[in-house]
Image 1 (cartoon, rainbow, N blue to C red):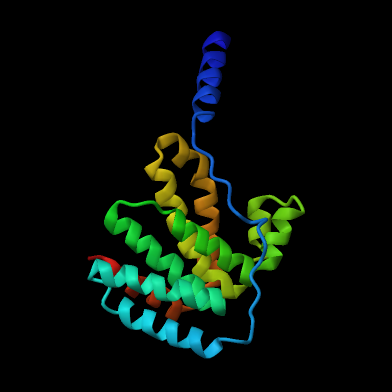
Image 2 (tube, rainbow, N blue to C red):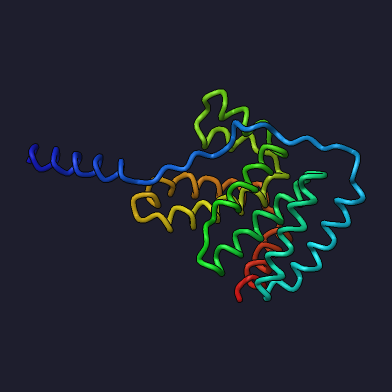
Length: 197
């Protein structure tokens, strides 16, 4: 009995070490807003919004991300980071692509809007405890981060999915907890219906 328990533990440890690990860029420099160029950024965001409204066309979806990426470099905002993480998620889903870009933009947005969360991680708090520090304005970013992380891990197999399952669950729980407004749930639900193509 003890021998079989040891064998199961050994095989589990061996297999879990084969899972892919993703290293978020939480410690990279945070973005800062420069007042110059706000009109240009607003125009680029508006053009991206127009193109995104035609997202059934894959080239329009990709073009919308290009406009928003230019805008976010000029004048970062929670709105732009949310749009980019969502659009890159959708693009990767439709092209069987890599979910890394959606994750990266969600991380950048969280560094921008939730420095308390990032500081908590830097101070050694567990991921779940640091998530408690994420403000209500980070709900959509957390949602798209969890969605992209789940798809990213699934693309890398069962072991990687198992490694990130708890992070996905806790991130999604926090996102839905802080976005507990009925209107927000309706928006997310409508968003997902609109994005199923």
